[in-house]
Length: 144
Length: 141
Image 1 (cartoon, each protein chain N blue to C red):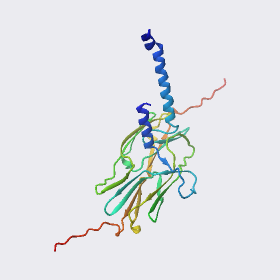
Image 2 (image 1 turned 180 degrees about the vertical axis):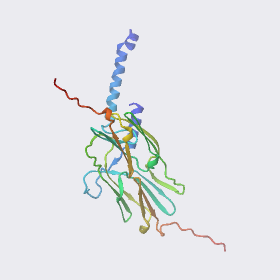
Image 3 (image 1 turned 90 degrees about the vertical axis):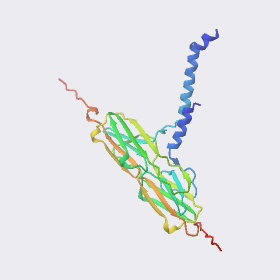
Image 4 (image 1 turned 45 degrees about the horizontal axis):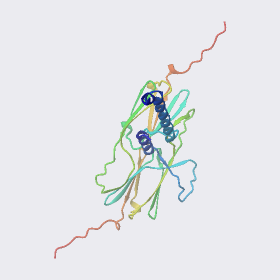
Protein backbone atom coordinates (compact mmCIF):
# COMPACT_ATOMS: atom_id res chain seq x y z
CA UNK A 1 0.00 0.00 0.00
CA UNK A 2 2.77 2.38 0.87
CA UNK A 3 4.99 1.74 -2.14
CA UNK A 4 2.50 2.69 -4.85
CA UNK A 5 1.78 5.86 -2.94
CA UNK A 6 5.42 6.83 -2.82
CA UNK A 7 6.20 6.19 -6.45
CA UNK A 8 2.78 7.19 -7.65
CA UNK A 9 1.47 10.65 -8.37
CA UNK A 10 2.37 11.91 -4.92
CA UNK A 11 6.05 11.22 -5.39
CA UNK A 12 6.29 13.29 -8.54
CA UNK A 13 4.00 15.86 -7.03
CA UNK A 14 6.40 16.41 -4.15
CA UNK A 15 9.31 16.61 -6.59
CA UNK A 16 7.51 19.43 -8.34
CA UNK A 17 6.91 21.12 -5.01
CA UNK A 18 10.59 20.94 -4.23
CA UNK A 19 11.44 22.40 -7.60
CA UNK A 20 9.02 25.24 -7.02
CA UNK A 21 10.59 26.00 -3.65
CA UNK A 22 14.03 25.99 -5.20
CA UNK A 23 12.95 28.35 -7.96
CA UNK A 24 11.50 30.72 -5.41
CA UNK A 25 14.70 30.59 -3.39
CA UNK A 26 16.74 31.27 -6.49
CA UNK A 27 14.59 34.28 -7.25
CA UNK A 28 15.15 35.55 -3.72
CA UNK A 29 18.88 35.40 -4.08
CA UNK A 30 19.13 36.78 -7.58
CA UNK A 31 18.19 40.39 -7.44
CA UNK A 32 17.01 41.67 -10.72
CA UNK A 33 19.70 43.23 -12.83
CA UNK A 34 22.53 41.35 -11.20
CA UNK A 35 24.55 38.58 -12.66
CA UNK A 36 27.06 36.05 -11.48
CA UNK A 37 28.78 36.12 -14.85
CA UNK A 38 32.01 37.92 -15.55
CA UNK A 39 32.31 40.47 -16.99
CA UNK A 40 28.98 42.14 -16.14
CA UNK A 41 27.44 43.91 -19.12
CA UNK A 42 25.10 46.81 -19.78
CA UNK A 43 23.13 46.68 -23.01
CA UNK A 44 21.65 49.71 -24.77
CA UNK A 45 19.27 49.17 -27.65
CA UNK A 46 17.72 51.19 -30.43
CA UNK A 47 15.69 50.15 -33.48
CA UNK A 48 18.91 50.05 -35.50
CA UNK A 49 21.06 48.01 -33.20
CA UNK A 50 22.59 47.68 -29.78
CA UNK A 51 25.58 48.85 -27.76
CA UNK A 52 27.16 46.52 -25.24
CA UNK A 53 29.38 48.01 -22.56
CA UNK A 54 31.44 46.10 -20.07
CA UNK A 55 34.06 47.00 -17.48
CA UNK A 56 37.23 44.96 -17.83
CA UNK A 57 40.05 47.05 -16.37
CA UNK A 58 43.67 46.09 -16.71
CA UNK A 59 43.33 44.11 -19.89
CA UNK A 60 45.44 44.63 -22.97
CA UNK A 61 42.93 45.67 -25.67
CA UNK A 62 44.73 43.52 -28.22
CA UNK A 63 44.03 40.45 -26.17
CA UNK A 64 40.26 40.82 -26.18
CA UNK A 65 38.65 38.44 -28.60
CA UNK A 66 35.18 39.31 -29.87
CA UNK A 67 33.26 36.93 -32.09
CA UNK A 68 29.77 37.21 -33.54
CA UNK A 69 27.73 34.40 -34.98
CA UNK A 70 24.25 35.48 -36.10
CA UNK A 71 22.77 36.93 -32.92
CA UNK A 72 25.30 35.60 -30.41
CA UNK A 73 28.15 37.75 -29.18
CA UNK A 74 31.08 36.11 -27.43
CA UNK A 75 33.76 37.91 -25.45
CA UNK A 76 36.99 36.21 -24.55
CA UNK A 77 40.00 37.51 -22.73
CA UNK A 78 42.31 37.13 -19.83
CA UNK A 79 43.80 39.33 -17.18
CA UNK A 80 47.39 38.74 -16.23
CA UNK A 81 48.51 39.08 -12.67
CA UNK A 82 50.97 41.87 -12.03
CA UNK A 83 54.37 40.47 -11.25
CA UNK A 84 55.13 40.92 -7.58
CA UNK A 85 58.36 39.04 -7.21
CA UNK A 86 60.14 41.58 -5.09
CA UNK A 87 57.23 42.23 -2.74
CA UNK A 88 57.83 40.76 0.64
CA UNK A 89 54.31 41.23 1.92
CA UNK A 90 50.89 41.50 0.42
CA UNK A 91 48.30 43.37 2.50
CA UNK A 92 45.29 43.18 0.21
CA UNK A 93 44.47 41.06 -2.77
CA UNK A 94 40.99 41.79 -4.06
CA UNK A 95 41.53 42.06 -7.79
CA UNK A 96 40.87 38.88 -9.67
CA UNK A 97 42.76 37.60 -12.67
CA UNK A 98 42.53 34.79 -15.14
CA UNK A 99 40.55 33.91 -18.22
CA UNK A 100 36.95 34.69 -18.98
CA UNK A 101 34.40 33.83 -21.62
CA UNK A 102 31.01 35.44 -21.85
CA UNK A 103 28.30 34.89 -24.44
CA UNK A 104 25.30 37.10 -24.98
CA UNK A 105 22.29 36.43 -27.10
CA UNK A 106 20.96 39.53 -28.81
CA UNK A 107 17.36 39.94 -29.91
CA UNK A 108 18.37 40.39 -33.56
CA UNK A 109 20.85 39.25 -36.19
CA UNK A 110 23.97 41.41 -36.25
CA UNK A 111 25.62 42.80 -39.36
CA UNK A 112 29.02 41.45 -38.42
CA UNK A 113 30.88 43.58 -41.01
CA UNK A 114 29.81 46.81 -39.36
CA UNK A 115 30.55 45.93 -35.76
CA UNK A 116 32.78 48.46 -34.01
CA UNK A 117 34.57 47.87 -30.74
CA UNK A 118 36.45 50.43 -28.70
CA UNK A 119 38.36 49.99 -25.47
CA UNK A 120 38.96 53.06 -23.38
CA UNK A 121 39.99 53.42 -19.75
CA UNK A 122 39.12 49.82 -19.01
CA UNK A 123 35.65 49.99 -20.53
CA UNK A 124 34.86 47.99 -23.64
CA UNK A 125 32.13 49.31 -25.91
CA UNK A 126 30.82 47.23 -28.78
CA UNK A 127 28.48 48.72 -31.34
CA UNK A 128 26.31 46.08 -32.96
CA UNK A 129 24.22 47.25 -35.90
CA UNK A 130 21.20 45.20 -36.80
CA UNK A 131 21.42 43.41 -40.12
CA UNK A 132 19.38 45.10 -42.86
CA UNK A 133 17.69 41.83 -43.74
CA UNK A 134 16.55 41.46 -40.15
CA UNK A 135 14.98 44.90 -39.82
CA UNK A 136 11.23 45.15 -39.85
CA UNK A 137 9.83 46.26 -43.16
CA UNK A 138 6.68 48.20 -43.69
CA UNK A 139 4.50 46.96 -46.46
CA UNK A 140 2.07 49.42 -47.85
CA UNK A 141 -1.26 48.24 -49.01
CA UNK A 142 -2.23 49.38 -52.44
CA UNK A 143 -5.90 49.70 -53.07
CA UNK A 144 -6.98 48.46 -56.42
CA UNK B 1 19.58 25.30 -0.02
CA UNK B 2 21.47 23.76 -2.86
CA UNK B 3 25.19 24.32 -3.08
CA UNK B 4 24.77 25.61 -6.63
CA UNK B 5 22.73 28.54 -5.39
CA UNK B 6 25.30 29.24 -2.69
CA UNK B 7 28.10 29.13 -5.24
CA UNK B 8 26.23 31.45 -7.55
CA UNK B 9 25.60 33.92 -4.73
CA UNK B 10 29.24 33.89 -3.78
CA UNK B 11 30.25 34.39 -7.39
CA UNK B 12 27.83 37.25 -7.75
CA UNK B 13 29.28 39.01 -4.75
CA UNK B 14 32.74 38.62 -6.19
CA UNK B 15 31.80 40.07 -9.54
CA UNK B 16 29.66 42.93 -8.35
CA UNK B 17 31.06 46.29 -7.49
CA UNK B 18 30.66 47.33 -3.89
CA UNK B 19 28.90 50.61 -3.31
CA UNK B 20 30.00 53.09 -0.66
CA UNK B 21 27.31 52.77 1.96
CA UNK B 22 28.37 54.80 4.92
CA UNK B 23 28.95 58.46 4.58
CA UNK B 24 32.22 58.70 6.38
CA UNK B 25 33.26 62.30 6.72
CA UNK B 26 32.02 64.27 3.77
CA UNK B 27 28.87 64.66 1.77
CA UNK B 28 29.07 64.08 -1.92
CA UNK B 29 28.70 67.08 -4.11
CA UNK B 30 28.09 65.06 -7.24
CA UNK B 31 24.90 63.16 -7.80
CA UNK B 32 25.12 59.49 -8.50
CA UNK B 33 26.54 56.34 -7.07
CA UNK B 34 30.00 55.93 -5.59
CA UNK B 35 31.76 52.59 -5.58
CA UNK B 36 34.68 51.18 -3.67
CA UNK B 37 37.36 50.13 -6.14
CA UNK B 38 38.88 46.71 -5.71
CA UNK B 39 42.51 47.05 -4.71
CA UNK B 40 45.76 45.16 -4.21
CA UNK B 41 48.31 46.46 -1.74
CA UNK B 42 51.89 45.26 -1.84
CA UNK B 43 54.80 46.27 0.29
CA UNK B 44 58.50 46.09 -0.42
CA UNK B 45 61.50 47.30 1.55
CA UNK B 46 61.42 50.74 -0.09
CA UNK B 47 57.85 51.31 -1.12
CA UNK B 48 54.17 50.59 -0.93
CA UNK B 49 52.32 49.70 -4.11
CA UNK B 50 48.56 50.10 -4.50
CA UNK B 51 46.69 48.87 -7.56
CA UNK B 52 43.02 49.79 -7.87
CA UNK B 53 40.47 48.84 -10.54
CA UNK B 54 38.74 52.02 -11.65
CA UNK B 55 37.20 51.39 -15.06
CA UNK B 56 36.02 54.48 -16.89
CA UNK B 57 38.29 56.86 -14.99
CA UNK B 58 40.39 59.18 -17.13
CA UNK B 59 43.81 60.55 -16.22
CA UNK B 60 42.37 63.97 -15.34
CA UNK B 61 39.55 62.42 -13.34
CA UNK B 62 41.80 61.01 -10.64
CA UNK B 63 42.16 62.85 -7.36
CA UNK B 64 44.62 61.63 -4.76
CA UNK B 65 45.06 63.26 -1.40
CA UNK B 66 47.29 62.35 1.51
CA UNK B 67 46.55 63.98 4.81
CA UNK B 68 48.55 62.87 7.80
CA UNK B 69 48.48 59.16 7.11
CA UNK B 70 45.06 59.02 5.45
CA UNK B 71 45.26 58.40 1.74
CA UNK B 72 42.12 59.04 -0.30
CA UNK B 73 41.71 58.11 -3.92
CA UNK B 74 38.82 59.43 -5.96
CA UNK B 75 38.02 58.69 -9.58
CA UNK B 76 35.41 60.52 -11.60
CA UNK B 77 33.42 58.48 -14.08
CA UNK B 78 31.34 60.09 -16.79
CA UNK B 79 27.96 58.55 -17.46
CA UNK B 80 27.84 57.22 -21.01
CA UNK B 81 25.84 59.39 -23.38
CA UNK B 82 24.46 57.20 -26.10
CA UNK B 83 22.05 59.16 -28.23
CA UNK B 84 19.06 57.32 -29.58
CA UNK B 85 19.72 54.33 -27.35
CA UNK B 86 17.91 53.21 -24.23
CA UNK B 87 19.34 51.03 -21.50
CA UNK B 88 17.65 47.68 -22.00
CA UNK B 89 19.60 45.45 -19.66
CA UNK B 90 21.93 46.35 -16.84
CA UNK B 91 24.20 44.20 -14.72
CA UNK B 92 26.43 46.86 -13.24
CA UNK B 93 26.03 50.39 -12.00
CA UNK B 94 28.10 53.29 -13.25
CA UNK B 95 29.47 55.79 -10.79
CA UNK B 96 32.54 57.35 -9.25
CA UNK B 97 35.14 55.48 -7.22
CA UNK B 98 36.36 56.40 -3.79
CA UNK B 99 38.49 54.61 -1.26
CA UNK B 100 40.34 55.64 1.85
CA UNK B 101 43.49 53.95 3.10
CA UNK B 102 45.20 54.40 6.43
CA UNK B 103 48.94 54.17 5.97
CA UNK B 104 51.06 52.88 8.79
CA UNK B 105 54.50 53.74 7.48
CA UNK B 106 55.76 57.21 6.96
CA UNK B 107 55.55 58.06 3.31
CA UNK B 108 57.82 60.34 1.35
CA UNK B 109 55.15 62.72 0.06
CA UNK B 110 57.22 64.21 -2.73
CA UNK B 111 58.02 60.84 -4.18
CA UNK B 112 54.45 59.62 -4.71
CA UNK B 113 53.80 58.48 -8.24
CA UNK B 114 50.39 57.78 -9.72
CA UNK B 115 49.62 56.36 -13.14
CA UNK B 116 46.42 55.12 -14.68
CA UNK B 117 46.31 52.70 -17.57
CA UNK B 118 43.35 50.80 -18.98
CA UNK B 119 41.31 51.70 -15.93
CA UNK B 120 43.82 50.48 -13.35
CA UNK B 121 45.30 53.06 -10.99
CA UNK B 122 48.84 52.33 -9.88
CA UNK B 123 50.13 54.21 -6.88
CA UNK B 124 53.75 54.02 -5.82
CA UNK B 125 54.34 55.37 -2.33
CA UNK B 126 58.00 55.41 -1.38
CA UNK B 127 58.75 55.09 2.30
CA UNK B 128 60.54 58.02 3.86
CA UNK B 129 64.17 57.53 4.81
CA UNK B 130 63.33 57.67 8.50
CA UNK B 131 60.86 54.83 8.27
CA UNK B 132 63.13 52.55 6.34
CA UNK B 133 64.81 49.77 8.25
CA UNK B 134 68.43 50.51 8.96
CA UNK B 135 71.10 47.91 8.88
CA UNK B 136 73.66 48.13 11.60
CA UNK B 137 76.92 46.55 10.74
CA UNK B 138 78.74 44.72 13.43
CA UNK B 139 82.44 45.26 13.40
CA UNK B 140 84.89 42.81 14.79
CA UNK B 141 87.10 44.21 17.51
